[in-house]
Amino acid sequence: MDYLWVLVLLILGVCMVCYPKILWKIENLFTVKNGEPTELYLVLMRIGGVFFIICSVGMIIYLIIK
Image 1 (cartoon, helix red, strand yellow):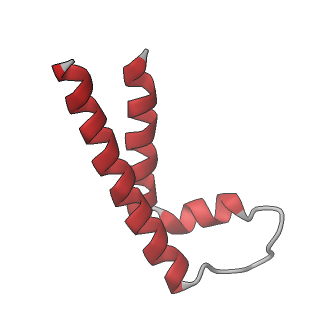
Image 2 (cartoon, helix red, strand yellow; image 1 turned 90 degrees about the horizontal axis):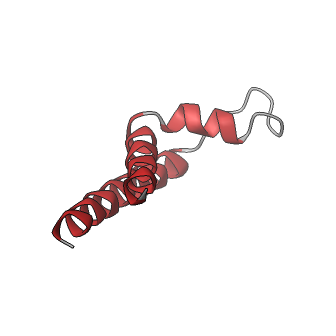
């Protein structure tokens, strides 16, 4: 069961790195019409995605060793 949350975190991190524009559109579906994300948002989203990936890999290693 612990691995399920780690897998969700890993998938979210990969999506944040690879598809930040799609995630922005999902987040702002009902609030913004024909808008585009800023470059700062895209950079911060990718940095957060890398952080999520690093954390999930660390958690996988921890769960295997424990």
